[in-house]
Length: 412
Image (tube, rainbow, N blue to C red; front, top):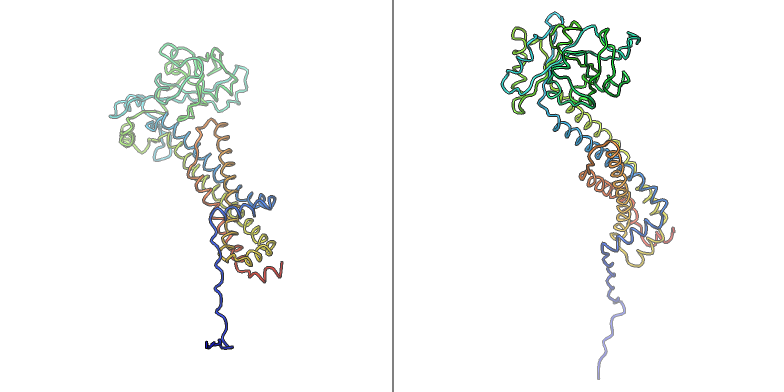
């Protein structure tokens, strides 16, 4: 006979373990995030637009700045940074001083100097288109006596015609800087101008002189004709010299004492290429300022993404409740909405990078600059947009994850 032992009535059945939520792969998260973005295209575009504008501004500014700096550096490499300019300063009592007549030869004898040339300001002499021109409308054109090796020393070139030579320097011939020629309405050699109450023939017109812009608005005549016909005193007002690259600073230190041993403080020495270096520095400053504006636009775009995600969570409570009821964990809900925010911001950042590159390339081509692709800006733009998306989506994703299935379905 078998005895049956009944289970006590008070004993309860063992609880079944809760089902674990299935792991969701990265591909599934991306698909779910894209579905959330594509499902509301208008809202997604408007939200990503702020991110795109901020990233485009940053990439375009860095691209244009890099192209401009590359152009300036190419000019510096071509023109050289070994040109020094010497001028007469002022005495202790504030009086104007003069350089010695032999100053060009004195400078040429300094060790390390390869070339030396100079110009002399011809006082009280103006140049006009005709002898009937208004004497007060000088146009700011200065008349300078020039040494024959001036062009080679300063790195200038003749756009049309010819430069002064040993024969022309003895006769009334003049070479015009490009701005002087524009003001006088002269576009080719052979025309005569009224210079110093007499006719001079234009023998050449210069290209813009980047390192010595004062020559652009000058009428250059030979040294001899200036002394003979224009009452030039023969004292150079400016000396230009080219040194060996490794001797520039040494030459700069000895120039004042060589030019004026008694009063070296009355001699001014400058390096024209410093102006181009200053332009590069100024562009860096402006680029930093515009980057700040781009960062502000990016922050505003992040706020827009966060607002969109908060609204999305409120509208999709039923979806959240249903997924939770089917076994989705809080981590999966949080990952889904966080992925959606990152995709929304990342797509805006990608579009912004393409837009910024297009603006940068178009600007460079239009300006004749080398096309420079700012790789750092591209990486920073995409990275910043992803970071902004992560920060903007963190709170809405957490809010969605905290919803219980019953609460979400009851309020849907």
